[in-house]
Structures are given as structure tokens and as C-alpha cells.
Image 1 (cartoon, rainbow, N blue to C red):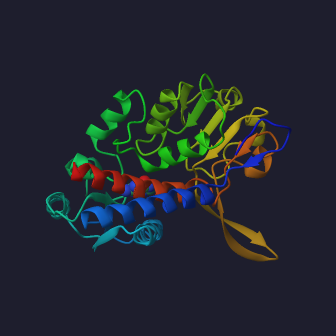
Image 2: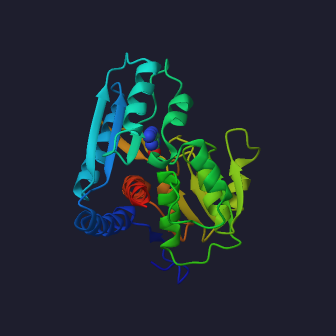
Length: 301
Ligand code: GUN
């Protein structure tokens, strides 16, 4: 996809880019299965029944199976203790057919998430959340093929790269400073030689910070918070938000998924923008499958 030619706004089709990535992974996994007699294994751990987590886990499991990854499913009760979860992770760390471990977040309040993430073996860290992998990402000067990189930001980066414009020197503003998205996104953009600003809820004059951006990555989790006139003419907008809101249509209340950006307004100024749904979401899952395949290949060395 090319942007910057004429006034048309390009819609970044995450669904299609993710499909291509999954097709390539499937071919690679088929070849690996032929040559080694083994396939990548992904352990998916869900604790409790948070509705959004169930949706994500189901989608991740389905996609993993479709590309030929073996899924080892552990759906355990809300009352599971931190010690019991640590024991499960430890078992999976030592299980030969498990190459990647995903513990779906959020965890119940009585479990310390960081303790659990720290306990996953760094080589099996399908999410790229372990401190060693966080450190590796911050140190690596380019995107080493063996790195386990957090899935959502890496998916965003692949979409930006697909635009075939030079990102070098661009002003990139990441709105949101989470460990899952904001911070690793900033690292990835820095590696592309962008000038990176991490903005957040305490940022003074967020509108003007955004107006200065050539790239806006919105990851705040607040429906349509970023308005169209915060977007500079020709900027690229990546919307990580997935927010369920209630709208009234034909006298009936309905649920609708919206991003962190007001799409209808921002589309008028952006040169390229991701839709919600069909933008970042499918890329996150495809990148999880990529990480699992990388972990499998690393285990063969
Ligand atoms: N919860 C929300 N996003 C994610 C993710 O990328 N990985 C995990 N494990 N949990 C999440």
C-alpha cells in the first residue's frame, strides 16, 4: 500500500495483512513439520471468566490451530491461587511440547501479574512480556528475527511498514504508556528512527502534542477520545483501542465497537488510518502466532 499520492485517505486493512502473515506462517509450519516431525505448541492459560478474555482466548486458539500450532488449553477457575498458577507455569516451562506460553491478562486481583509474567521462561514468552525480553527489545538496534516482541505493538509496526513510506525522522506520538502497548511501541518506533513522544493521561495539552505528530498511535482505552482536529493533515493514525459502547439505532439500544480515535473525524485529515474493528486486532493475534513459531525455531537450535 502506498500513501502520499493525492488526497485519498488509505484505510489500513489489518485483516488482510494479518491473513497474509498467517498464510506465510502456515507454510513455514508445514515445512517445519515435514523436516522435524514436530510442530510449535502454544499453552493458553485463562484464569476465571472475564468476558473480553474469553473472546480473545477463543480467537487466539482458533487462529493458532488454523496455522498448524498445537494448542494446550488451560482454563482454570477464578479462585486459583498465585502459588497454583506459578506451579502450572513451572510445569509448562518444563513441558517439551510447549514452545510458547500465554497467560491471558488481566488476572484476578489476588494474583500479582508481574510475578506470573516473570515466572514464564523467557524462551517460551509468547507475549514478549518477560523482563529479559523487554530488555532485549530495548537494547537491540534492529528487529532481530529471534526476538519475542509484544504482539500488539509489533502488529502496529508491520502495518506502518506496509505503507512503504520512510518512517525515519517522523514525529511519532504514542498515546498510552502501558507495558503491553505504549512502552514497547515507543521502542519499536525509536528503532525506525522516529522522534518518539510518549503521551499519557497527565500530558499537558495533549491535543497540541498530537497535532505535531506525523504518526499517532492511540492506546488509551477511552472511546473516541482523540478528535479529528488533533490529527495533522497527512498524518498516519493507528488506533489500538477496542471499546464497546452502547448506541441507539432505530429506537433500539445496540453495542458498537469503537477505537480510541474518532474515526469519522480523523479520516478527513489522515493520509492513512486503521479501522476498528479490522485494524490492529487481527494483527495482534497473527503476531502471537509468529512469536510462537519463533520460539519453536529457537528451541530447535
Ligand atoms: N490482555 C490484553 N492484551 C493482552 C495480550 O496481548 N496478551 C495477554 N496475555 N493478555 C492480554
